[in-house]
Image (cartoon, rainbow, N blue to C red; front, side, top):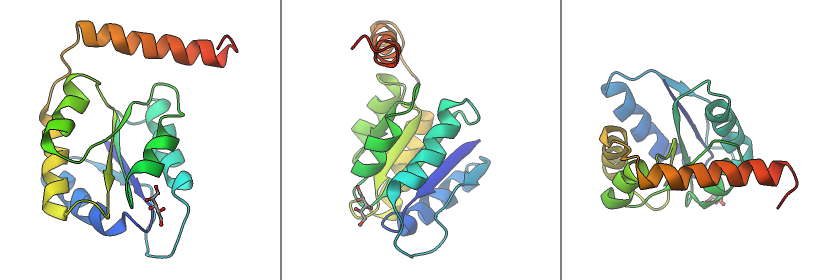
Length: 151
Ligand code: RB5
C-alpha cells in the first residue's frame, strides 16, 4: 500500500503518479488534496508522514510545487526518510543508499512521464544495507537523542 498526498501545486503531477502506481497494481490511499484550491502543504505532508511513521503504510509519495516544503515537514516525523528527487540517479540512490520511505517530487519541476519513471525507479530499487544501514542507525539514534533532549 502506498499513501500519497499533494497540495494544489502538486495535484496535477500527482494524478500522473497515482495512475502509474495503479498500473503497477499497487493499492493507493490518496490523502488529498482533491481539488485545485490553495491549501497548506504541511497539512498533507503530515497525513502521509504520520501514516508512514506509525507503520500504517510501508511507503508514501508527496508532491508540492517544488517538493521542498513537503520534504521539510515529512522529515520531522520519527522513522521517516523523505527524499526529494529530480532525476533517475537520485531516485535510485534514495532507495539504495538512504532507504527512503517517502519519495517527494516537485509538481512545478517535473513532467508527468518523468515523475512516473522516477517512482518506478525508486520502487524497483533495493536498499544495499551494510555501511548504509550503519548511517541510518545513526539517524535513528539522533532522533532518539533529540526526543530525549540530549541534543
Ligand atoms: C505553493 O504555492 C508552494 O509554496 C508549495 O507547493 C511548495 O512548493 C512549497 O514548498
